[in-house]
Length: 268
Ligand SMILES: C[S@@+](CC[C@H](N)C(=O)[O-])C[C@H]1O[C@@H](n2cnc3c(N)ncnc32)[C@H](O)[C@@H]1O
Image 1 (cartoon, protein in one colour):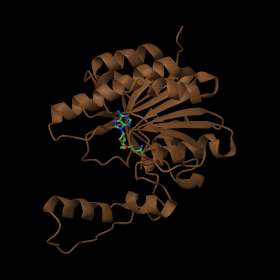
Image 2: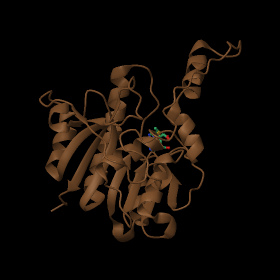
Image 3: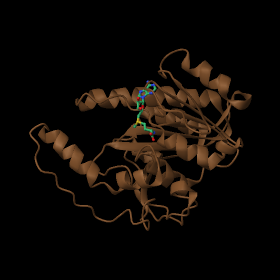
């Protein structure tokens, strides 16, 4: 299964059409063991249709009953447990990187909004930070259990201490990729939720513009409707390629989308 990648030029302006992309064979997939790209759990038995139904328990509300059934029937949740990943979100990064291949051995990676640690696990595997080759520096304002090959701190990214802490950890003070899966808790008011996530995305993009080494990558969660015009312009001036991607692991009914900017042109 391929996944949708939308050229960012049109994602905000409505000018370009979404492309259906065919996945190539994966280079690692879960735990680096050659899974198909597109859906990272394809061929691993993970796409099997699950159909768990729960008896109504008086202690559960209807919405928590629905949430629980969705979790129990979600092949990505099952696959993440099987593969030892801390989140089903790990498969989003696997799928995006299997397709665009920006994580490489020896690189320095920043993971913003890292808890519980799925993306950091994948980044650590792919850059080889467990063996000391690459580096993963992660933050979240929530607590996160330590992870091999990952230096992390419990800091709010909007706190003035966050950026100096990250820079202080990075070898030569620069990163090869800035990843942001940050999402503020939703309040259910779509405009407010959209503004909050886009505020975080903008802050992450400006940070990436300051900290990336030439050739670097920025991957960031945004909301359907695409990236705001200002942010898109900012990224297009600084990166060779900017696109929107929606990997199969991102639920179809979710407004979540990722902006992927590759080929950082440098600060000069
Ligand atoms: C979708 S989760 C990230 C999942 C993670 N990528 C994984 O694979 O395990 C979003 C995270 O963003 C964090 N977050 C939201 N706003 C933040 C902020 N201002 N500073 C740091 N972390 C933030 C949340 O605490 C949450 O853990």
